[in-house]
Image 1 (cartoon, rainbow, N blue to C red):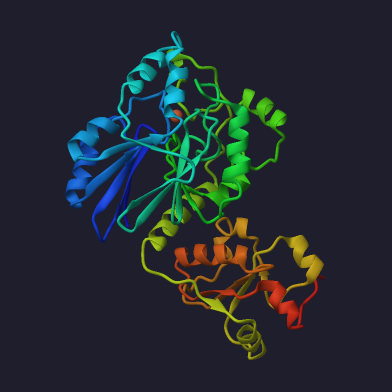
Image 2: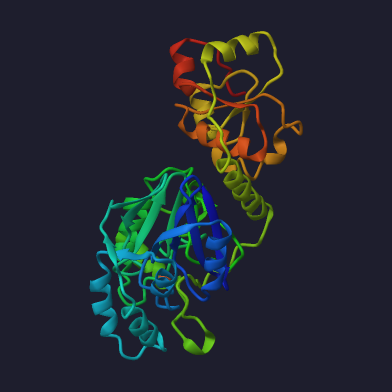
Length: 381
Ligand SMILES: [Fe+2]
């Protein structure tokens, strides 16, 4: 896969392309044409589709202009005509109405419904309707990553007080659609003003202020009321992804998460395979006291309930990035991770291999398989 993120003052755009066929798509282009044209030319890419995840209110889309230059189709949601009707009713809103009017004139060649797919060479891009920021918002799912547009940005969600926005729809999109997706997905949003390049969905589920607390629709509406600064052209607070919350201090976790996501992205871009270890083999290694760094990535209370495998260190999967310093310095050390079923630990295994622990394996069947075989367990002191 060929992939590139472009950052224009916090507005993020992407090129994703099939390496084999050299065909690709551009997502959410804005500000300047040349970076996209230069990138496509330098990789010899035929750009076939240019996608806007939603009708933008803070910048004018470059999709049709780029499509004309590149011979591509412009793509938006099937709900874009309805969003444009809403936008046309806005007559005086700090200049937003002018951006909306300009974007409403941009032609759309192809409308996508929920679940519709675009196949571009070996890459499949799937539309996922995720209203709330606008009526026509869609996220784009592909393989190990999700382009979240403004439904989920790093640390929070996009504004819901712009034309077509709805806290109720945002609640459904975040908790009904985004939350059930895999923790492993790398999140690529349409905005980030803090210099993050991406996140992982697992990290966002635990740390994002809009996701980490389960709220009823009513509670979520009340929470969002205080989250977004008032729209104000004089202070420039018209962007889609601003919040009133003080940004979290850039501590150890934030820095690690950034390097972690960069590492993971590099790892996923190279050929790799997930390796597992059967319970029988792990038991044998423990009995023979082979060199092994064994990690139980469950929550501490789970270890208390069931016990744990002898010699295991407990580092919950959500803390792996933060506690990477507790892993062996020698990246060739054999590492085995396990959880209850093997699901969470498969994420941990990907993360650790992304960090360079080449010899990381995931215990097949997890603790369930271990218990089924009546293998020995240690108890918490
Ligand atoms: Fe937006």
